[in-house]
Image (cartoon, rainbow, N blue to C red):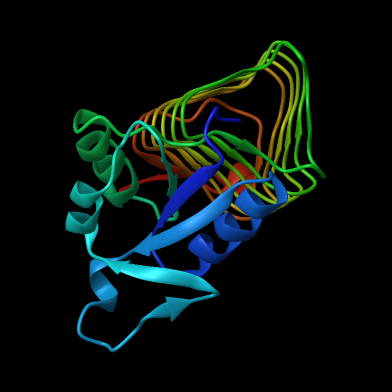
Length: 214
């Protein structure tokens, strides 16, 4: 969680809506929304949250008293989520690390700044999840996993014990990665795949059906 109870949401897409409700479930008061994509559209409120403007509106607020909620989702090859965090962190802003009340996370799990654990997710003992990663709805991370920065573990995905994910890896919905597997930086695991072999950096794996390199 975070020592502040006020937050500003970044983004207004589908993931942002989920993050908004996650933040509220965690007891945060979301006091504004920033999204340059809404400029010029006459928007004043979004999902009950005041629209503040583009990211430049943050300069009018003190970064020490309000945290940010990263509402940008993760798509393979899209670095917008990490780029926004890097830019605003350099300006002194902090990003909330959130665990949904309906999720379960082991006491010794280590979560980086801006990690989001969604409803029904499970994070088992000894796991380490680096900054900005999304552990989405009803996904499961078993013991001693090592998850890199800005990964996305999609709804219903399962990572068995001792799995390693490189930075910006994407695990599709319903995929299963068996124990001890190493997934390289930027690799993509297709939805529903059953991964029984290591996946190299940048590769796309369809599990038992083989691996494709783009």
